[in-house]
Structures are given as C-alpha cells and as structure tokens.
Image 1 (cartoon, rainbow, N blue to C red):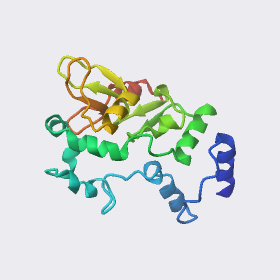
Image 2 (spheres, rainbow, N blue to C red):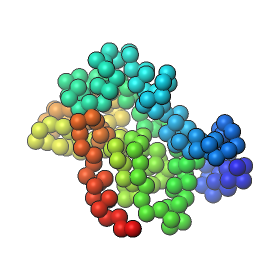
Image 3 (spheres, rainbow, N blue to C red):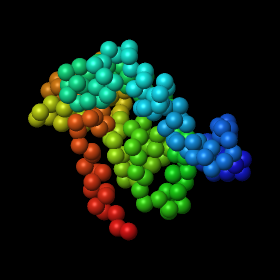
Image 4 (cartoon, one colour):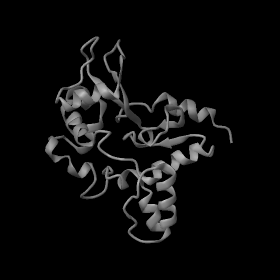
Length: 200
C-alpha cells in the first residue's frame, strides 16, 4: 500500500497523504475508496453522523424536505444554510479522485459516472466531457423562474451563499438553484444522452 501511495504522490504531485486505512484488507481498501466520506464529507444516511441525522437545527418538517424542490421553492433558506456548511471548495479530492484522473491520462477512462455533487472530480482535473454527474452539480446553477433559466457559474453562487443572500436571478429576480437534483426533479439530460452513447 505504501508503494501505491508513494507512486500516486509522485505521479500526481499531491504530496504524501496521511495513512487512512483502518485495516490492511480488501474491506479496508474498499472503505478507504468511498471517496466522498474519505474526503470528510458526510453521507446522507449513516446513523448519528449522516447528513439527515444532523438537520434538526433547520426546523424541517422531515429531513428529506431540505432537498425537495417544492419545499425549496417555498423556503430556500435551510438549503442555502446547509450549502454554506458543505460548499464545494472546502474539501479536497481523495486519492480515489486522482486515480480516476490518472486513468483518464492513460487513456483508460471512457467516462466517470458519479452521484456526488461536491465537484471533487472536477477539482482533481476531470472535465465536463469526462463526467456524468447523475445527481447534478454545484458547478453551475440556473434560475428556476418559469420563463427564464439564466445560467450562473460556481463563483457567482459561492458569492451569494457566503454573503448570506438567497440567490436571485439578475434578469427576473426569481430563485437561482444549484444544478443538483432535488427530490421531485428529473435526472440531468446528460445522464440519459451519455447512457445512449455507450456501446459495449
């Protein structure tokens, strides 16, 4: 394992990471490669430590409401307060993210499918063409006004979120939502178009 860690550190220029394997076994490696959690990002459902277990402070009718589009349209404040805590850029890619980038560089990656919304694959060096972000992304945002749909980039959204402002469209003053998939929304169109283009 030390050999791989040193190889990735030298090849990718990411410095020498601390050891994080809890045991030297296939199961230990599997746990380590759970990329989101090993980056320090909480998952959704782990008892006690998962995101849903720690949302009481937002006074929600039930934990999942924070990611429901209907609730968001009526009360966006809880989502944006949570977004301040978990915002992309506060976490670093793991060795797994850099391994995927290395696969791309070696011509071994057709596409990376991810359910993560944290943009860590992009931070590690993958491009939009390399990715299918099944649950969407914070990388872009759109106005959810009925006739608008204006697109905004990550720096614009970040400025709004960290200014404690509810992001509103510069064109029509409707809510602007990161392009992550909420309950009640369809998966991104890229998910379906990329799936159709795969030939095995």
